[in-house]
Length: 252
Image (cartoon, rainbow, N blue to C red; front, side, top):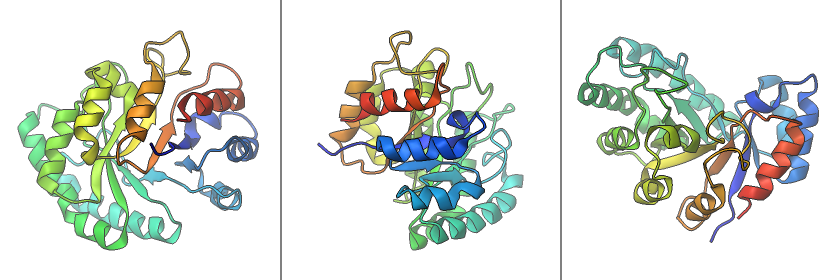
């Protein structure tokens, strides 16, 4: 069993007047990474011995890869951000399918695979992962197309690159399909990042929500997965205490 490498998603834990304190606390607790941080804190994160596990690879969650008219723009953005990732030891860029807007799912799979294939070779050559995020379309992101694991896996099969995988968000996939451990075990080869949160509410992973995280973390630790699991919940109370509790819960 490998130890889970945990990271902190900057946006949901930096909502105070002292992000530096949060970064310093995360390092003290044992977190290995801060995700999607403000660039002005990149140096501090590295000084504290942590990596930046992910940054956003291209603009606009809803207007994404499932439109061929976006492919030139997104290719340019991803190529630029791949170079930034290499320069700053960032292993992953987050990518988005975009909203359906009436596009059939089978056509969306084809178009998204085409878009990711345009940059897959460069990602392989430079050692950067492209992470297509699975999000729920029921609560938080209405009409988002990459909203089921099977859809995302089919995209991965068509791209067929070791550097193109899914960002499996446990919170979002609990809302859409459940059956989390079986799905993770069956598809771990297509996953190159994880996010967490409690459901409902996207808050702390406590006894007021329905996901029991310890066996999920054990399933990940028992696999060949060796990248990061990012805490992406909005804390109900003190952010640093929430980070400490979440770390202990997932430290398997």
